[in-house]
Image (cartoon, rainbow, N blue to C red; front, side, top):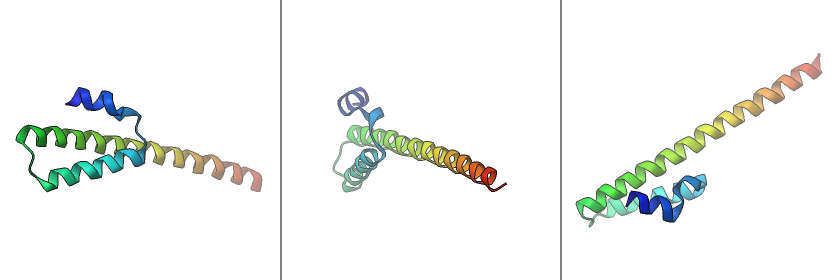
Length: 81
């Protein structure tokens, strides 16, 4: 399932919103139950990948925001002098 999921859905190219929605759907399916052990394991792995994607996007965004704040803070400080 891993390769199929990655290729069909382009998991590495998802936006944060897409990955979060898919993660929420995955959690819902797991909570609903009724899956075989193999399906549950595959869904869990999918959820972990989606969680990692969301975390990586958030970390990247945090770094970018920090860089922007630093840049404009430095420019504002320079213009005040």
